[in-house]
Length: 78
Image 1 (cartoon, rainbow, N blue to C red):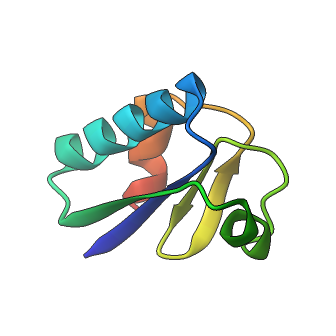
Image 2: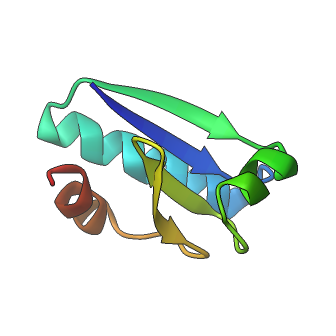
């Protein structure tokens, strides 16, 4: 099961990233768990300087932008 984490303070872009990540995971038929992280101490501990960001299995994959569903599908299928 993949753990998908959306890191950010709750801005509209963070919400859009969450939607895109969930859509990508569903389209791929993955078993996944989604988590929103809005605690800036935790975000900083993960080395993220710019939100929104997306981590997969604890590893930051995108930072400071909202990738397309297709880009996310590519990343999640690795």
